[in-house]
Image (cartoon, rainbow, N blue to C red):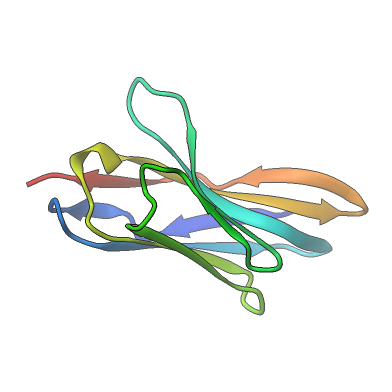
Length: 119
C-alpha cells in the first residue's frame, strides 16, 4: 500500500511564498514520477507541476517562473516551492504519484492541503 501525505499549506498574503511537501510511504513500489495538482472551488483539478524520476520537470503556464518542483529520491519526497503567490493560486493542492507496484503502474493521490492567498 502506497500512501502520500502532504504538508505545508496555509494562508499567505499575495506576493508571498509557501513550500509544500509530500512524503511517499509504503513498501514494494518504485516511483516513476510525482507531481502537484490543484483544485479551486467550482473548477476542475489541474496539473501544476510534474517531476520525473530523472528530474525532468513540467509546469502549467500559469505557474512558470513562480513555482519550482523538486524531489528527494532517497527520502521519497517531492516539494513545491511557490513564490509570487496570487489570489488565483488559492486551491486545494494534491500530491500525485505514479508508481510501479508489483510490476503494475498505479496512480496515487494525497488527501490535499489547502492553500489560501489573501490579504
